Image (cartoon, rainbow, N blue to C red; front, side):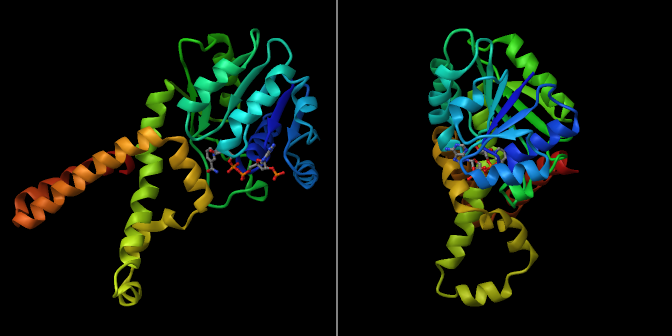
Amino acid sequence: MKIAIVGLGLIGGSLGLALKKAGQPELGIIGIPRREETIGLALKMGAIDEGTTDLSKGVAAADLVFVCTPINLIVPIITEIAPKLKKGAIVTDVGSSKYEIVSQAEKLLPKGTFFVGGHPMAGKESVKLEAAEAELFKGKAWILTETSRTSKKAVEQIEQVVRRLGGLVVRIEPKTHDLAVAAISHMPLAVAASLVNAVAGEPEKDLMAKCAASGFRDATRIASGDPILGVDMFLSNKKAVQKMIGAFKRSLANLEKLIKEGNGEKIRDELARAKSFRDSIYG
Ligand code: NAP
């Protein structure tokens, strides 16, 4: 098998390092970033065997193509590579939202080639190739999406590769995936950023900042991430994020109502319900 990785940032670079560590694939990895400098660095790090910035040339001989670029480029890149793929080639991606990408990619790929949406549930604060590591996917869920048009054989082939990297494959429908990530990945950013901005909008914000301790820091940590990544998250998963914002507003409005009523018993029930579910996840 020959593997092409389009986009060599944190995820694409880590994928290359993890594949090499697992002794994969027999015919080597071709890396396809945007800039020549990235090829040099990826070769030096041992994340790829060869590189090119020519997309069409790069994917022509690949049996499996991972598209690991920023999310807004995934569909344009699939559009560009579609006519250049060899027969039987499988294309997958790592974008953090799935419905739009999967529905468009399934229409774009020619007969005899296959698309399976993917999303490794792994990452870290520092992005870019310099932060890539071979162990990034170990023990982490790697979602593969299935629709009525998905080839079972293609999913199985990607699953085998992901397993060799130590990833745990979870197969779900794109819409189910998007609601889940809206809830557990995109909403925390929406809530953290809104909380910080609410405080920053208060006349006493300087005093508040002086008093801020670990509670505020822990609850808002992800508001310090890259704003561009946040824009991509929200806009590529609009419907599911809006649905979860609605659920969050109802939950907050209920708490507001109980506080207004001075209903200590019900407030305690709400907090106990939250504690119980959170503890069931993190212990
Ligand atoms: P990143 O570190 O910013 O890297 C993006 C890479 O894409 C760079 O290597 C860049 O190349 C390349 N690129 C940009 N435009 C390109 C083009 N037109 N053709 C080819 N390559 C191009 O991004 P990342 O954090 O790895 O994220 C990549 C994808 O993974 C996103 O879709 C994101 O949703 C998904 N994801 C990210 C995380 C996370 O925690 N970061 C987790 C799960 C999934 P140059 O270096 O040459 O500029």
